[in-house]
Amino acid sequence: MNDEPDQYAKLLADLDAQAAHRFLRTIGSHQEAHITLKGRRMLCFGSNNYLGLAGHPHVRAAVRNAVEQWGWGAGASRLVTGHMEPHAQLEQILADFKKTEATLILPTGYQANLAAIRALAGRGDVLFLDKLNHASIIDAARGSGAIVRVFPHRDYRKLERLLERSSGTRRRVIVTDTLFSMDGDFADLPRLVELKHRYTAHLCVDEAHATGVFGETGRGLAEMMGVEEDIDVVVGTLSKALGGIGGFIAASQSFIDWVINTAGSFIYTTAIPPAACAAAAAALELVINEPWRREKLLRMANDLGMALRARGFDTSGSTSQIVPVILGDNEVALRLSHHLEENGILAPAIRPPTVPRGRARLRISLTAEHEEADIEHLLNALGASGPP
Ligand SMILES: Cc1ncc(COP(=O)(O)O)c(C=O)c1O
Picture 1: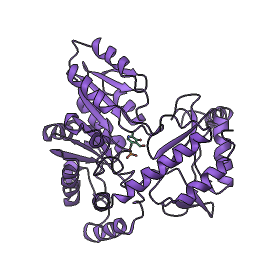
Picture 2 (picture 1 turned 90 degrees about the vertical axis):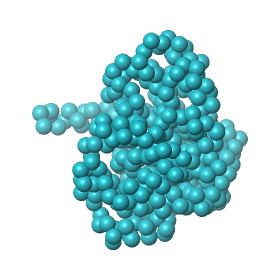
Picture 3 (picture 1 turned 120 degrees about the horizontal axis):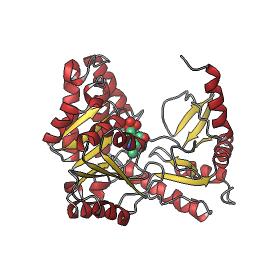
């Protein structure tokens, strides 16, 4: 290393001064509503394991069987020798589930966004992004060579003005999270579909947090809002409600073939272990066969949001299992998170740059494994008197 080591100590001290220094916490149990932290059993409100499938016996059994049959590693990238039967099977299962012509699995949702967005837009094209889109969308856009236009969160009038001003460009692509990961609110997909048609744009949506949770059959918010057929490209992940690892793109066969032939984040990386595909397939069976999980989750989330607002907390525009408690200042968010930890509750403080400056928060996320008593415990620990 060329830099003096104390350069980093100084940079980290600057982060400390802004209450922005982040540390890893080591969890000593598997992922459930209760986890073990520093040897202590805690109630967890910080995970994306929304349906409680990360440690589900059906998923574990699928992994054990797959490891017996296929071993652990895939050994190579998909285009070399890493594309195995479990990958092909899962892609077919996902295409059937999502009702699309084809799907493609990538090692993470992050890489799926890189691949999809860079396949959609490059030099001479324009990408239109919601300001609160996930970091993987922003990173994908930045490296794409396309012109990037960012509109304020859910400000579709502004988006329309940007679209009007961009006539004459080669391809226009609107990209949005469907369920925003830090605010728990929804994109207005019917409005975006209308704009897409009016301005002959393409529409790419990221259903990372909605897959398995929203829609009659758990396909996501596009299903719930009845607009699936109008969306060109869907990105999803196997890592949140499905409880495992991996991302996917659902689109036409020709788009998927184009991604396979051009996307660096697909071509130059090792395939996920075949057992991870088996885990996702087993998790999807539970999504399909056990709708009570998403129903219970959303019922509890609705009750929690109402109770928090009644106590004077700002839950932003949340209408989902992601319920932020907006606190503004980093220190205040850290203090409340520590207070909860003392009361046996893990609800990490989320600070900039993950959220905008002055919008630090606790991001409370629920799972179908939580019970009413857990919500009561959280509300009591937050204090009946309202925000700090
Ligand atoms: C909206 C959104 N898209 C994509 C991702 C990336 O997914 P993965 O964790 O599978 O890489 C995340 C992860 O937090 C996300 O919130």
